[in-house]
Image 1 (cartoon, rainbow over the protein chains, first blue to last red):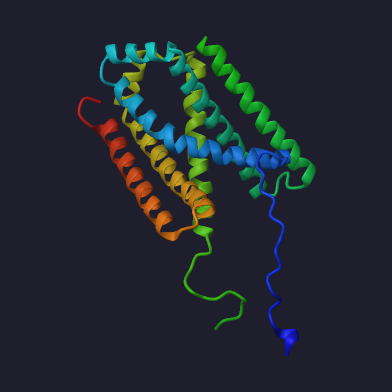
Image 2: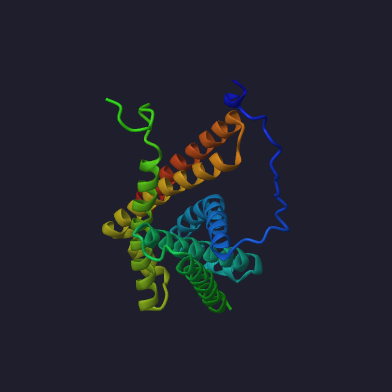
Length: 132
Length: 119
């Protein structure tokens, strides 16, 4: 019976030009949640462990670390990781609220995505100001 | 007796990962809020206070719990990323092994920092 046969696989349109895709705001926050998480895993965890260990060695080592943070590269690393932590933290809280069925409609989702994006950037700016 | 439309293969259908991701997130959020709240309240940190904190056993234990939550959370997250983007099973499995080894190593490193020599 031909009607029961699987239809031949039709070529489906695949459109994955990452430079041309316009992500809605919640999707943008979502991919940043992933990027920031990966960054925290790859750099954040080992660097934090190393820093805490160094900072406990002696007052001299502590002072050395403070000098490292005055270097532009040190500042850059710290700022990027601060943003990653803040964004991941706030985007995570947003997920937890949504798990409790708070703010799950489209408009609330868009608004909370904007709030996460803006507050994490503002707090990161606070870190930048503090470093200079 | 099979009544649902799921095949009972003993899989957890991801609920365990889903739940542990959230529980560890809450643990980390509480720790982070308390620590940064105290930092802001006291307006910074000098070496003496830093050293005293790491000699204070309740802080060490709280930090250890935070780190275990972090490493567990990282495992679930990295595994999700790997499952989404790395399709060849052998490559994914090898990478996941490396990640597990790294995370267990970080746990050991954490213990060393918190309770090791000189700390």
